[in-house]
Image 1 (cartoon, rainbow, N blue to C red):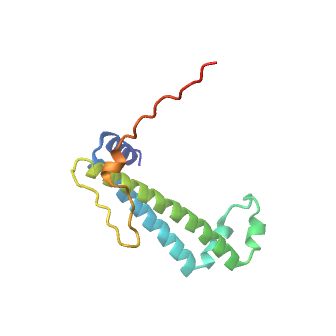
Image 2: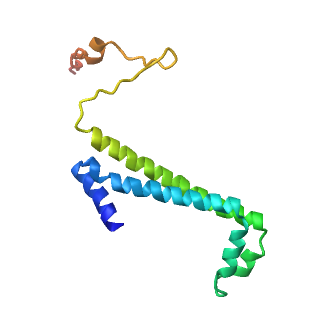
Image 3: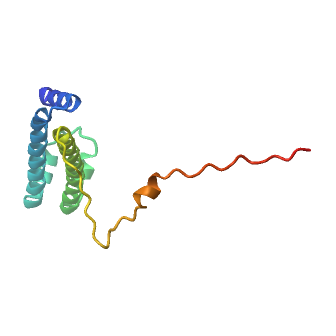
Length: 144
């Protein structure tokens, strides 16, 4: 894991897109495994109670948690896993954008902004945009 993270950092720093790919693949694999965990909690909701029973007796608030309704526990676990999956998806997007930026850095593609009548961008004519306004004469002071 340290090697893969180091490769991604080096690839981003030195602008080598191929070095970022292993970290991106790891993130996708990790996201898929966490999604499978969420699906297993939905399909087998009793596994949450079984897991709680396996915890050591010294675990804080174990009895209080076990006395909670099973569906409430499943909802809490799914909410927690959902937050984690959302954060992981955001990070995957960040790494993908970094990869696209690094891999597209050497190309000479031009970004085209397509508009429709609904999204027309109103810009001033070029001549008006670069025109330098005339200088105003300095104010005249009255002598006493």
